[in-house]
Length: 283
Image (tube, rainbow, N blue to C red; front, side, top):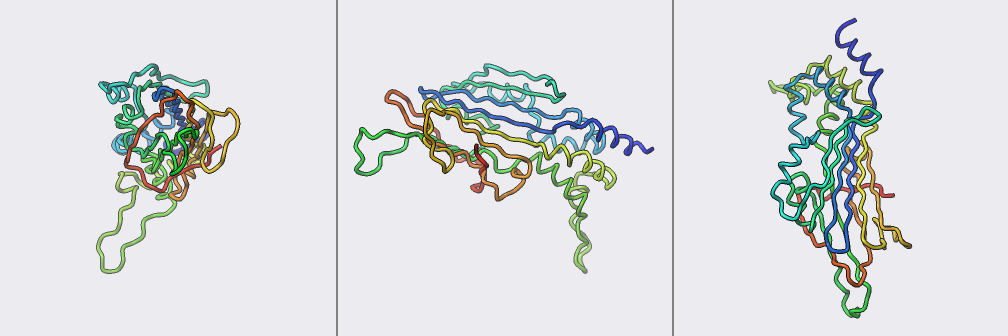
């Protein structure tokens, strides 16, 4: 049995999960709040992919922001006025996944948006203006709109490997000496390694999950395009790998809540770098 085949058998027998990410934005009545991030990933899978594709190719993945390391987070948040890390831990879950948990307290949303990890997001939050002719006594609403994910770079790279293994680059038109080398050759990965990576990654990638929660200081009046009634203050938005890869998927986080008399509305406007076409199924 060849080394690659043996490694493939071991991997197919032991793989669990791939990437799970959950963010929770908790907004308080004073205009501040907390940001929580929990990342879980299969570190064993990550390490074994590196064994197959080589350290040089893996470094190109590592340059696309995943997994985050505690030291990177501390350095990125250090010196941001009004932002305080209250929890930063990395460890192992009961299911064998590596987990990183971060909680950050911020006085203003604008303070947190200076962090490079989320600085590229399009986010708009603030008190809605009264319509012409509405009396000052009209209940005021706060609107929260965010386009958190335009693309997931490291998942794009992994998906490119899967696609390249299934679809070799076409030969160049007659008369042209060169053809597009495709993602395999650009990463320095041969066809045998790509076939193995394809078999390694295809099952766990279907279990990739991203969730964004928003917790408001008073009851929600709408989430996405749906009205809400009652005392619910939590909205959850979820996407899987297929949705994250689909450019047509709506990944916008949209919600509104009613302000109470003494509440302070959070105020933030961030143009970001995300694509305008973005959203997600909300529940």
